[in-house]
Image 1 (cartoon, rainbow, N blue to C red):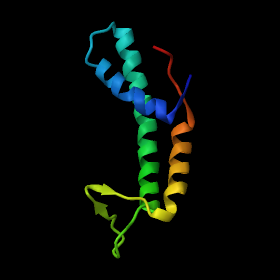
Image 2 (cartoon, one colour; image 1 turned 90 degrees about the horizontal axis):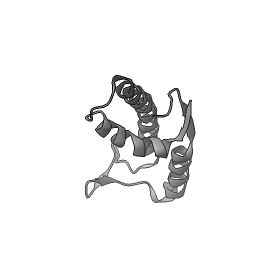
Image 3 (cartoon, rainbow, N blue to C red; image 1 turned 180 degrees about the vertical axis):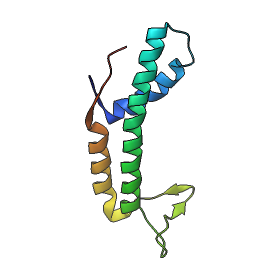
Image 4 (cartoon, rainbow, N blue to C red; image 1 turned 135 degrees about the vertical axis):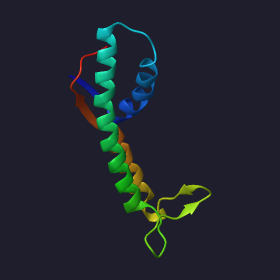
Length: 102
């Protein structure tokens, strides 16, 4: 088992993805693929949670659609601190990955 924060997972996944294009022994390739699959599961859960937070804290129009300004969505001014605290806590959350170290 490996303990990682969500932030560490988000940083590690692109590197592991690049490693899948390299040539390794069969065992190493298997370990990388297995670890990447486990990380992808946690990333999916993070993205679902983050999307819900965006829906809860970002500005919306009268129809409930997110308002885009300059290609970005914006957190409601009175919700910025709460949003930042929650997203930071989420990124610091530790999860256990059922994999061995590479």
